Image (cartoon, rainbow, N blue to C red; front, top):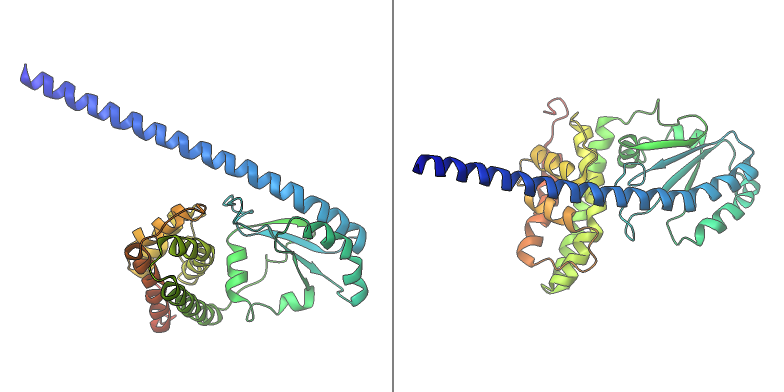
Amino acid sequence: MDRRWRWLGRRWWVRWWRLRWLRWRRRVQRRRSRRKILMLDAVERVVSPFLTAADAALGGGYSAVLYGSAARDDYVPGRSDVNLILVVEDLSPAALRALGSAFAGWRKSKLEPPLVITRAEWDRATDSFPVEIADMRTGYEVLRGADPLRQLEVAPTDLRQALEREFRGKLLRLRQGYAASAGDPAALGALAGRSAGTMMVLLRGLLTLLGRAVPKDPLQLAVAGAEALGVDSEPLLLVVRHRGDANWRCPPESFEPYMDVAARAARFLDQLQLGDRS
Protein backbone atom coordinates (compact mmCIF):
# COMPACT_ATOMS: atom_id res chain seq x y z
CA MET A 1 0.00 0.00 0.00
CA ASP A 2 2.82 2.42 0.91
CA ARG A 3 4.52 1.63 -2.39
CA ARG A 4 1.35 2.47 -4.30
CA TRP A 5 1.00 5.79 -2.44
CA ARG A 6 4.61 6.65 -3.25
CA TRP A 7 3.99 5.79 -6.92
CA LEU A 8 0.86 7.96 -6.98
CA GLY A 9 2.75 10.76 -5.25
CA ARG A 10 5.58 10.67 -7.78
CA ARG A 11 3.07 10.62 -10.64
CA TRP A 12 1.25 13.63 -9.17
CA TRP A 13 4.52 15.57 -8.89
CA VAL A 14 5.48 14.71 -12.49
CA ARG A 15 2.10 15.95 -13.72
CA TRP A 16 2.33 19.08 -11.59
CA TRP A 17 5.80 19.99 -12.91
CA ARG A 18 4.75 19.22 -16.47
CA LEU A 19 1.72 21.51 -16.09
CA ARG A 20 3.95 24.28 -14.71
CA TRP A 21 6.36 23.84 -17.61
CA LEU A 22 3.53 23.98 -20.18
CA ARG A 23 2.11 27.13 -18.58
CA TRP A 24 5.55 28.75 -18.59
CA ARG A 25 6.06 27.78 -22.24
CA ARG A 26 2.68 29.26 -23.23
CA ARG A 27 3.52 32.51 -21.41
CA VAL A 28 6.85 32.74 -23.26
CA GLN A 29 5.16 32.04 -26.60
CA ARG A 30 2.51 34.70 -25.91
CA ARG A 31 5.21 37.25 -25.01
CA ARG A 32 7.14 36.41 -28.18
CA SER A 33 3.97 36.68 -30.25
CA ARG A 34 3.13 40.10 -28.77
CA ARG A 35 6.72 41.26 -29.30
CA LYS A 36 6.64 40.10 -32.93
CA ILE A 37 3.38 41.96 -33.56
CA LEU A 38 4.89 45.12 -32.05
CA MET A 39 8.01 44.62 -34.15
CA LEU A 40 6.04 44.19 -37.38
CA ASP A 41 3.96 47.25 -36.56
CA ALA A 42 7.08 49.35 -35.90
CA VAL A 43 8.69 48.20 -39.13
CA GLU A 44 5.56 48.77 -41.19
CA ARG A 45 4.90 52.18 -39.65
CA VAL A 46 8.43 53.50 -40.18
CA VAL A 47 10.12 51.54 -42.96
CA SER A 48 7.37 51.30 -45.58
CA PRO A 49 6.79 55.08 -45.93
CA PHE A 50 10.55 55.65 -45.98
CA LEU A 51 11.07 53.16 -48.82
CA THR A 52 8.14 54.58 -50.78
CA ALA A 53 9.77 58.02 -50.57
CA ALA A 54 13.20 56.53 -51.40
CA ASP A 55 11.73 54.82 -54.48
CA ALA A 56 10.46 58.18 -55.70
CA ALA A 57 13.80 59.88 -54.98
CA LEU A 58 16.15 57.23 -56.36
CA GLY A 59 13.99 55.61 -59.01
CA GLY A 60 15.07 52.09 -58.15
CA GLY A 61 18.49 50.54 -58.71
CA TYR A 62 19.36 50.51 -55.01
CA SER A 63 19.37 47.89 -52.26
CA ALA A 64 17.62 48.29 -48.90
CA VAL A 65 18.46 45.86 -46.10
CA LEU A 66 16.70 45.55 -42.76
CA TYR A 67 19.05 44.11 -40.13
CA GLY A 68 19.45 43.84 -36.39
CA SER A 69 16.77 42.92 -33.86
CA ALA A 70 13.87 43.75 -36.18
CA ALA A 71 15.15 41.21 -38.73
CA ARG A 72 15.87 38.56 -36.08
CA ASP A 73 12.47 38.71 -34.32
CA ASP A 74 14.27 40.10 -31.27
CA TYR A 75 12.81 43.59 -31.21
CA VAL A 76 12.41 45.17 -27.75
CA PRO A 77 9.88 48.05 -27.82
CA GLY A 78 11.28 51.25 -26.40
CA ARG A 79 14.88 50.03 -26.52
CA SER A 80 15.59 48.51 -29.95
CA ASP A 81 16.18 50.50 -33.12
CA VAL A 82 14.83 49.66 -36.55
CA ASN A 83 18.09 49.26 -38.49
CA LEU A 84 18.07 49.94 -42.22
CA ILE A 85 20.87 50.49 -44.72
CA LEU A 86 20.64 51.69 -48.32
CA VAL A 87 23.32 50.67 -50.82
CA VAL A 88 23.12 53.17 -53.67
CA GLU A 89 24.99 53.66 -56.94
CA ASP A 90 25.21 57.45 -56.65
CA LEU A 91 25.39 59.54 -53.49
CA SER A 92 26.03 62.97 -54.92
CA PRO A 93 24.78 65.96 -52.93
CA ALA A 94 21.80 66.09 -55.31
CA ALA A 95 20.94 62.45 -54.54
CA LEU A 96 21.20 63.11 -50.80
CA ARG A 97 18.94 66.14 -51.11
CA ALA A 98 16.42 64.02 -53.00
CA LEU A 99 16.32 61.63 -50.02
CA GLY A 100 15.51 64.50 -47.67
CA SER A 101 11.75 63.88 -47.64
CA ALA A 102 12.26 60.20 -46.83
CA PHE A 103 14.53 61.05 -43.90
CA ALA A 104 12.15 63.77 -42.70
CA GLY A 105 9.42 61.17 -42.30
CA TRP A 106 11.73 58.78 -40.47
CA ARG A 107 12.93 61.53 -38.13
CA LYS A 108 9.43 61.77 -36.62
CA SER A 109 9.83 58.24 -35.24
CA LYS A 110 12.85 59.38 -33.14
CA LEU A 111 14.65 56.18 -34.19
CA GLU A 112 18.23 56.08 -35.46
CA PRO A 113 18.03 57.08 -39.15
CA PRO A 114 19.05 54.65 -41.93
CA LEU A 115 22.62 54.38 -43.14
CA VAL A 116 23.43 55.25 -46.75
CA ILE A 117 26.52 54.03 -48.61
CA THR A 118 27.59 53.75 -52.25
CA ARG A 119 27.94 50.31 -53.76
CA ALA A 120 31.66 50.88 -54.42
CA GLU A 121 32.22 51.84 -50.76
CA TRP A 122 30.16 48.88 -49.58
CA ASP A 123 32.20 46.39 -51.60
CA ARG A 124 35.37 47.60 -49.83
CA ALA A 125 33.91 47.99 -46.33
CA THR A 126 34.62 44.59 -44.78
CA ASP A 127 37.97 45.65 -43.29
CA SER A 128 36.50 48.91 -41.97
CA PHE A 129 33.31 47.46 -40.46
CA PRO A 130 34.02 43.76 -39.86
CA VAL A 131 31.91 43.42 -36.70
CA GLU A 132 28.94 45.27 -38.16
CA ILE A 133 28.94 43.33 -41.44
CA ALA A 134 29.48 39.98 -39.71
CA ASP A 135 26.53 40.80 -37.45
CA MET A 136 24.32 41.80 -40.37
CA ARG A 137 24.99 38.44 -41.98
CA THR A 138 23.56 36.61 -38.95
CA GLY A 139 20.08 38.05 -39.58
CA TYR A 140 18.83 40.39 -42.28
CA GLU A 141 16.06 40.89 -44.82
CA VAL A 142 16.46 42.45 -48.26
CA LEU A 143 13.56 44.86 -48.83
CA ARG A 144 14.69 46.39 -52.12
CA GLY A 145 17.05 45.37 -54.91
CA ALA A 146 19.82 42.77 -54.98
CA ASP A 147 21.30 41.21 -51.84
CA PRO A 148 24.47 43.23 -51.08
CA LEU A 149 25.61 40.78 -48.38
CA ARG A 150 25.48 37.61 -50.44
CA GLN A 151 29.06 37.72 -51.72
CA LEU A 152 30.61 39.85 -49.00
CA GLU A 153 33.16 38.03 -46.80
CA VAL A 154 34.82 39.34 -43.64
CA ALA A 155 38.48 38.35 -43.13
CA PRO A 156 38.97 36.50 -39.80
CA THR A 157 42.01 38.65 -38.93
CA ASP A 158 39.98 41.85 -39.36
CA LEU A 159 37.13 40.43 -37.29
CA ARG A 160 39.39 39.24 -34.47
CA GLN A 161 41.13 42.60 -34.15
CA ALA A 162 37.87 44.53 -34.25
CA LEU A 163 36.21 42.26 -31.68
CA GLU A 164 39.13 42.59 -29.27
CA ARG A 165 39.03 46.37 -29.64
CA GLU A 166 35.26 46.51 -29.11
CA PHE A 167 35.31 44.22 -26.07
CA ARG A 168 38.09 46.31 -24.52
CA GLY A 169 36.10 49.47 -25.20
CA LYS A 170 33.00 47.90 -23.68
CA LEU A 171 35.00 46.90 -20.61
CA LEU A 172 36.27 50.47 -20.17
CA ARG A 173 32.74 51.88 -20.36
CA LEU A 174 31.34 49.29 -17.95
CA ARG A 175 34.11 50.03 -15.44
CA GLN A 176 33.54 53.75 -15.85
CA GLY A 177 29.82 53.36 -15.26
CA TYR A 178 30.35 51.02 -12.33
CA ALA A 179 32.64 53.51 -10.61
CA ALA A 180 30.28 56.43 -11.31
CA SER A 181 27.23 54.55 -10.04
CA ALA A 182 28.63 54.28 -6.51
CA GLY A 183 26.93 50.91 -6.22
CA ASP A 184 23.43 52.21 -6.99
CA PRO A 185 21.42 49.18 -8.26
CA ALA A 186 19.08 51.34 -10.37
CA ALA A 187 22.02 52.98 -12.17
CA LEU A 188 23.72 49.61 -12.66
CA GLY A 189 20.49 48.10 -14.03
CA ALA A 190 20.18 50.92 -16.55
CA LEU A 191 23.85 50.59 -17.54
CA ALA A 192 23.61 46.83 -17.97
CA GLY A 193 20.41 47.16 -19.99
CA ARG A 194 21.95 49.73 -22.33
CA SER A 195 25.02 47.57 -22.86
CA ALA A 196 23.18 44.30 -23.55
CA GLY A 197 22.51 44.98 -27.24
CA THR A 198 26.17 45.69 -28.00
CA MET A 199 27.26 42.72 -25.92
CA MET A 200 25.05 40.43 -28.00
CA VAL A 201 26.45 41.89 -31.23
CA LEU A 202 29.97 41.11 -30.01
CA LEU A 203 29.03 37.59 -28.91
CA ARG A 204 27.54 36.90 -32.34
CA GLY A 205 30.78 38.14 -33.88
CA LEU A 206 32.80 35.90 -31.56
CA LEU A 207 30.78 32.81 -32.50
CA THR A 208 31.07 33.71 -36.19
CA LEU A 209 34.84 34.04 -35.84
CA LEU A 210 35.04 30.64 -34.15
CA GLY A 211 32.93 29.02 -36.86
CA ARG A 212 30.18 28.11 -34.39
CA ALA A 213 26.42 28.27 -34.84
CA VAL A 214 24.95 31.66 -33.93
CA PRO A 215 21.60 31.26 -32.13
CA LYS A 216 18.92 33.83 -32.89
CA ASP A 217 17.33 33.50 -29.46
CA PRO A 218 19.08 35.96 -27.07
CA LEU A 219 19.16 33.53 -24.14
CA GLN A 220 20.61 30.75 -26.27
CA LEU A 221 23.12 33.25 -27.64
CA ALA A 222 24.22 34.13 -24.09
CA VAL A 223 24.73 30.45 -23.29
CA ALA A 224 26.64 29.78 -26.53
CA GLY A 225 28.85 32.85 -26.04
CA ALA A 226 29.66 31.92 -22.46
CA GLU A 227 30.48 28.37 -23.52
CA ALA A 228 32.86 29.66 -26.21
CA LEU A 229 34.64 31.83 -23.64
CA GLY A 230 34.65 29.16 -20.94
CA VAL A 231 32.75 31.34 -18.46
CA ASP A 232 29.57 30.97 -16.44
CA SER A 233 26.53 31.92 -18.54
CA GLU A 234 24.38 33.16 -15.64
CA PRO A 235 25.77 36.75 -15.53
CA LEU A 236 24.95 37.17 -19.22
CA LEU A 237 21.57 35.47 -18.90
CA LEU A 238 20.58 37.75 -16.04
CA VAL A 239 21.26 40.91 -18.05
CA VAL A 240 19.64 39.56 -21.22
CA ARG A 241 16.49 38.62 -19.31
CA HIS A 242 16.18 42.16 -17.92
CA ARG A 243 17.31 44.19 -20.93
CA GLY A 244 13.77 45.41 -21.66
CA ASP A 245 13.01 46.26 -18.03
CA ALA A 246 13.50 49.98 -17.43
CA ASN A 247 12.99 49.50 -13.68
CA TRP A 248 15.49 46.70 -13.14
CA ARG A 249 17.77 47.13 -10.14
CA CYS A 250 21.04 45.25 -10.65
CA PRO A 251 23.00 44.73 -7.42
CA PRO A 252 26.78 45.19 -7.62
CA GLU A 253 27.39 41.49 -6.98
CA SER A 254 25.40 40.69 -10.15
CA PHE A 255 26.97 43.45 -12.26
CA GLU A 256 30.57 42.55 -11.42
CA PRO A 257 30.59 39.07 -13.06
CA TYR A 258 28.82 40.56 -16.11
CA MET A 259 31.58 43.16 -16.36
CA ASP A 260 34.14 40.37 -16.05
CA VAL A 261 32.71 38.65 -19.15
CA ALA A 262 33.93 41.61 -21.25
CA ALA A 263 37.38 41.34 -19.64
CA ARG A 264 37.53 37.60 -20.28
CA ALA A 265 36.41 38.05 -23.88
CA ALA A 266 39.07 40.69 -24.60
CA ARG A 267 41.74 38.44 -23.09
CA PHE A 268 40.46 35.42 -25.03
CA LEU A 269 40.60 37.29 -28.34
CA ASP A 270 44.04 38.72 -27.59
CA GLN A 271 45.40 35.19 -27.14
CA LEU A 272 43.37 33.52 -29.92
CA GLN A 273 45.39 31.86 -32.66
CA LEU A 274 43.21 31.82 -35.78
CA GLY A 275 44.69 28.52 -36.89
CA ASP A 276 42.97 26.89 -33.91
CA ARG A 277 39.48 28.34 -33.54
CA SER A 278 37.82 25.45 -31.76
